[in-house]
Length: 246
Ligand SMILES: Nc1ncnc2c1ncn2[C@@H]1O[C@H](COP(=O)(O)OP(=O)(O)O)[C@@H](O)[C@H]1O
Ligand SMILES: [Mg+2]
Picture 1 (cartoon, rainbow, N blue to C red):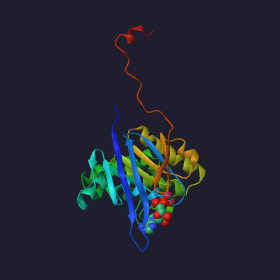
Picture 2: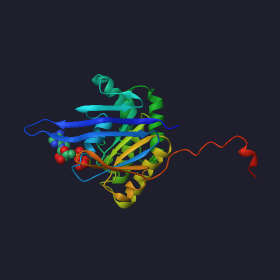
Picture 3: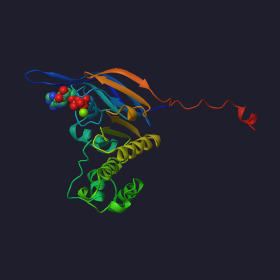
């Protein structure tokens, strides 16, 4: 049975000013657990604004973001921060690693902030995550000793550190060469294949085509949706049918 991990209901985000500006203009969206969603659209169409709302980095003017069944609009700031820290992982175009920290220390940051594991378990998880992303030899290096692709993989390890249900990524391959783009995108695809929910903003139509679904945003609204891969599980085998198998 499909399970909705992330839901947007009537999301609106307005900026008040001399001229008020609507960044997100009424978005309804449900993302299933384990689904890989690509968000595309022209520059300035509100993709980042939408992603920040979905990841609770920003709060909507109207509407609701429901994370793993939990409505978030009425939560206190600290409860929102807790949901953000434990349920959402973020990857941006720029890695935003702390330059004076090693890869491992960067990966440990969200775990330290959540303070739900012993130091020993945090270290073990940090090293395991780095190893799983091919960075075992780079755990003690600083960001300036790593390539762009390696830095982005450290950022992905950091995003995964608290085992979030949802990963949101804003143009995560936007600053990478072709080989690193492929690597980072494959990692994100694997994360979704392993049951996490991934929402990625990308400019790259070839990358978007590898998602399960693509939503195209224009002027803060969903302009069109393309279902790219059927995730419906195969129907259960009727009783008795198995006996007929060779
Ligand atoms: N805090 C803000 N104040 C005013 N305008 C903003 C703010 N954030 C974004 N915008 C504007 O809103 C529009 C949508 O931005 P954004 O969500 O970043 O689009 P995208 O990621 O699709 O390029 C853009 O025109 C941008 O300049
Ligand atoms: Mg953007």
